[in-house]
Amino acid sequence: MLKNKHILLVVCGGIAAFKALDLIRRLRERGAEVTPVLTKAAEEFVTPLSVSALAGNKVYRDLFDLTSEAEMGHIELSRAADLIVVAPATADMMAKMAQGHADDLASTLLLATDKRVLIAPSMNVRMWEHPATQRNLATLIGDGVLVAGPNEGDMACGEYGPGRMAEPLEIVDAIDTAFEDGPLKGKRILVTSGPTHEPIDPVRYIANRSSGAQGTAIARALSVLGADVLFVTGPADIPPPAGVEVVKVQTAAEMLEAVTGGLPADAAVFAAAVADWRMASESGSKIKKTKGALPVLKFAENPDILATVAQMKKGRPALVVGFAAETDDVVAHATAKRERKGCDWIVANDVSPETGIMGGSENAVTVISDKGADTWPRMTKDQVAQRLALQIAEALNG
Ligand code: CTP
Image (cartoon, rainbow, N blue to C red; front, side, top):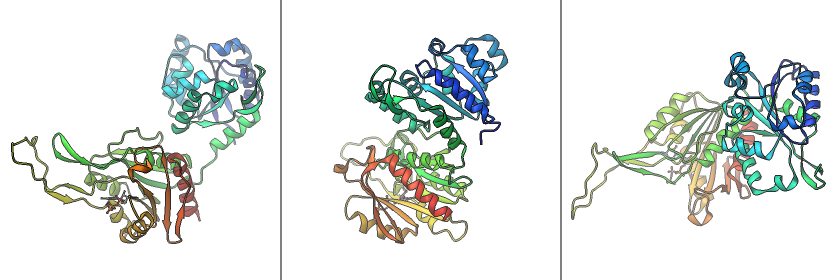
């Protein structure tokens, strides 16, 4: 499985750095090529000579090492690998990665790479449990970083709990899994996300409230399962996930064009909060205030993108999933919406302000299909996305 795979191994400064030596040995036994990178602190725990001897490769240590820059720039170094593994990953390195720092060779490589990254955290239990580390961990998972461990056990500092680096063979297993094909490998899935902005004049627009969080999480979860994702997004509050093809649009008309132009696809998920109306005609100049005369806005109906795709006679994706944002009678409205629009599944949620779902990090959904309504417990938007992605994989492979 690991034969001829090229692994860039970043070793940080921690008591578990010595286990990185065994990890190198295990990886090479399996036919992988290992290029080691040591942080300055790592050199307090392992010597460049021993690491280089075990890896059978040059050790990279310094961002400003001109010889290595001449041989291979840091950008190239970060891209030549099939996977970057950070073991041990210290609390400090996780914080740097989560923040996007690039103040030494290791952090610069991690910021410059376009490859997947797997971390094996190792730190004192209090540091691991600290909200700052947990926040950084959540950010990194959100960015698509894979995580092996940590394990629970006695620590070098005398405390007990989670924080011990995973054993080298466990890290090798996680690396193996990272190279396995996900259940959506070879499937193309289109996802719409975010609001649309419909201009009134050059400075004003109509929009729906939507952060794009749920759509972004779905695109990421599908991509993690190996799908080739086309992400069509309106102006969202958060950046699109890594590793997906992104098309940015403003209006519903542009979104429809990007969606139809992006077909064929095996599945399509419509998580965007599309504005139902646009101006019948957009004013070319700013509408001025006139005392005693309120402006009259004339609306035109926007195309229903979900219904257009769900009702396509030719080239319809095998699975079309819509969303239903409701404020009352959620299941009844969503069931009717599924029939009306002709989609296969509707993911319905209650977006009344008291639920805190719109703009929040959690969601409580009911998935409506031809089998009826399945209500999921309230969970994070990432968890909803992961569960939905797994169900999509089952439906497409079933
Ligand atoms: N949708 C779409 N194009 C539109 C409007 C909605 O693709 N012009 C999609 C959304 O992405 C979502 C689903 O249709 O998947 C339902 O959106 P929602 O706003 O709940 O429904 P509406 O059709 O707008 O119905 P209503 O406002 O009456 O509830």
